[in-house]
Each structure stands twice: as structure tokens, then as C-alpha cells.
Image (cartoon, rainbow over all chains, first blue to last red; front, side):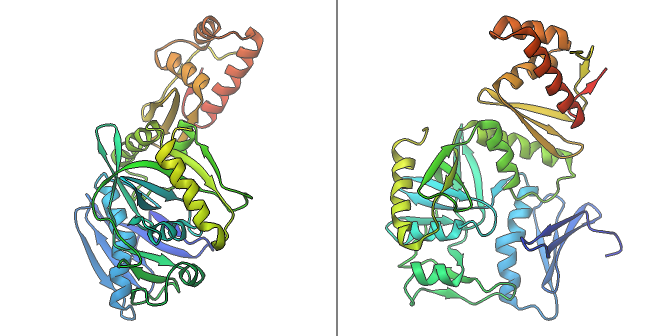
Length: 272
Length: 90
């Protein structure tokens, strides 16, 4: 590209993850050494241009996991970096930066009688004033330690992708997926694991809005109309009073107890 | 304490009430800012066209607070908002 990128998305270690370019009215998202994705100005279509050394699985996975949420954000949808599970008749989401344990916690729920709704990309819609969780792809991405701690060896694995050693586990008998929209009862923003026990605190609405902004997929922060629409949706979500801080010790042996306490909080008394 | 005579909310600065608090977005910079319930009330008065002095009087009528302390808090808040480009001071 002759022009510099309008935005760079980086990995936690500082490496460039995505370079975002403007291409006329449209966008071009470049994952170095993997693929370019041309995204229509309104997010309505995406075209992939794989690099010669890229494998098809990786290109498809990035489309589902990264490009599609960014394109949907351009179309006006609110999408969070969150994993979500069905508990009873409602959905709870676990939001946070990479490495905070969203997928691990969702898997712990989904392997103990509950269902996975989405992993690391949750689209939120509305039913009146009620936020609604839209189901995502029926798979979860886990590091090897989480996979071996939570799933039996025979779990259905998708082919590996070239940019990470995380395993992709497909939903099935042991990891059940729920494919219908559900009322979103709580969004738990995950802490750093320094808590000695399960700690849940409601987040003040204005702070909740600011934190949700930081956890949103947003293709173009320089586009005022898009930013305005995103602001309205984030504020609406914060106003719904569903955002909490959650921290707990990162100990696989204690994870099911964490799930039990969270289920009680979400189902019985979510406003505390 | 010296309150600015007037403040103006620039075009492109949006605010939205969330419960009794407020979230502000500057579309130009993409920066967000949150105000607690008291700050949200002050913003409400400023957005309605009141001067800082008028906002201060209105707040004194609503909250049990010492005038000097309120003026100090108001001045600090206005400077912070001004520093972030969410209001202009004159």
C-alpha cells in the first residue's frame, strides 16, 4: 500500500497484528504474512486475498474470528471481546483483554451442563431495553493447559492455524453450543487473577461505558457517524446495569466452584 | 477561586446519561470521558446554557455543600474537561 495505515492493532507483546488501510471508501485489513481482507465501506461484504504461504484454515479462521466482527462493527453492530455461555434461560458474558481467561471460564461452564454461546467475539442486539446475546461460531480457542484441564482427550479439534499454538475445539457432546439469541443478564469484565477468592463488584455506569469501549471491536474510530452510533450502543449497554468486575484465583481445581458462585450471582441477584 | 465566565460545548462533543451518571464522547478525537452523578448534574446545567457561576448557584440549591469547596471542585472539573477538549473556557 502506498499510503500509511490509518490504524494498527497490536498483540499484547507489541507485535503488529492487523494493519488497517483505507482503500477509497472501503477498507483493507492486512494480517502480515497471512492475508489481506477487503472490507466494503459499510461492512456489508468482505473479500479475502491470502498470502502465498498462508493456509486456507488460517485465512478462514481469521475471517470468522477477527475480520467478520470488525466488518459487523462498521455495519453498526456492537461486538465485544467476550466469550459467553448460557446458564438456565439467560446468557452471561466474560469480557476482557487477551489472556484474561475468557475462553477457559466459558469452557468450564460449557462442559458442566451449560452451553457455549460465543467465544471471543460476542455480538449484542436489543429487545427493547433488554440486551440480547447473539450466538457465535460453535468453537472455542484454548491454550494447551486449559484444554487438558477441562476437556477429555477425544474432544473434536479443528485443524490448527498458523499464527498461534492455541487449540481450536469444536462444539459437540462434551462442549455444548447454544445457537439461538438469549437475554444477556451479566457482563463480567475479568481481572488479573490477583484475587484470593471470587470477587464480583458492580461497575458504575459511566465507568462501565468506558470499559466497554475498550473491549469493543471497532473498525474505524475516525469515522464520526460510526463512532456516534457505537457511543449510543455502549451507553445503552452501560445503562442496562449489567456490567460487573470479576476476579478469582486462576486455579483449575477451583474453577467449578467459581462457576457455581457465578451462576448463583447471575441467576439470583444480579443487581448486587 | 476563579470560575471561567462562560463555557461552551464544542460541536462534535456528545453526552449521554447512563443511570444518574454521564458518558461524554469527543467525536473529533475519539476520546471518552465519564462523570459521576454530581459531575453529570454540572454538565446538565452547562449544556442548558448556564454559566459556571449560575451552575454553582444551582448546585448550592440542590446539594448541602460549602460554597468554597463547590467552587474549587467546579473549577477543577472545568479545567479537566477543558484540557480534554470537551468544553472551551472563556
